Length: 135
Image 1 (cartoon, rainbow, N blue to C red):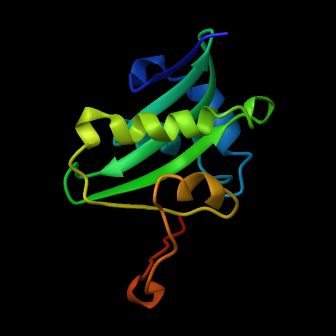
Image 2 (image 1 turned 135 degrees about the horizontal axis):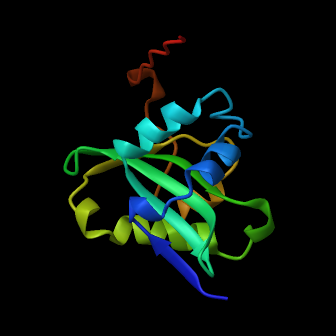
């Protein structure tokens, strides 16, 4: 078994990503077109074993000031093998992302993974605001 993590968008399996995300708690209402657009405008990483995609992550960034880690997943049958950790390590070692000064993400269940990469709860969450638009 050969693990490969790639930032080449042309390798991404959009149908696989769509299927996973629309069954997740955070992206269940996204359309395939919305997922395609979000990939087009993000730095993306695919996780592959023997050329089969088993995971994904995307980063929304300006490459200097801010990076937001989104849509991170490894399919259930491959969890617990360190692949998510390798994915995060690859993201933070990517040369295009080396100058990002502030990183953020939201998670309901993967705190243990992200604390390994120095993520911590917001010091003052009252400073942050959100605007949600439903179409």
